Length: 255
Image (cartoon, rainbow, N blue to C red; front, side, top):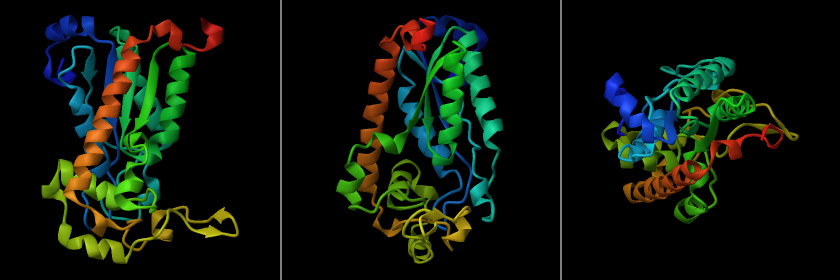
């Protein structure tokens, strides 16, 4: 099927007859410290979604690049939309595909800030019997690999995991000379806890550089393994979803 946007309306009409699953990448345009590009999140999602482009049973949709990122607004270059707008936009895109007969979708997401809005969109589309969408954060598919590669550092932001992934998919955009600067101003963990409450509402509240973690630990070899594992898991998810009858994916009280 390759990419939907590369088809004409007539070739899309014919190709979509065999398509079971729409794959749509979502991410953000937001600060990732001084070393990684603003488009890190959508670039990672886009690269992984593109691995489905040669499948006959899937169609890869254009990337939705701007997401829920207002908490990074104090850093230059960050773009954002509010959660409701993002939720509605994703719902409209997937509703459009359902209109053309493709009622199952995987949302390949590269930005954690989008997660809640994507879950709400997926729930509404299912409840309305419009479509079944599976939001998929690529880092959630790694099953212990990050611990193997980086120890118990956890998932941060513009950290060793994201930096490794970017070295894999777009190393020309990574400023490796700025990794130490990013780490020097980074936080050890996401947020700022005070007596059990998180009072770090914006990234600037707890990270001077915008990074969270240890980006100097990033390697191309780690990026290769992260990408390969995520690619395999995405393929398996698309396989599974493609095999499910749409009616079986609806709420139990709708069947």
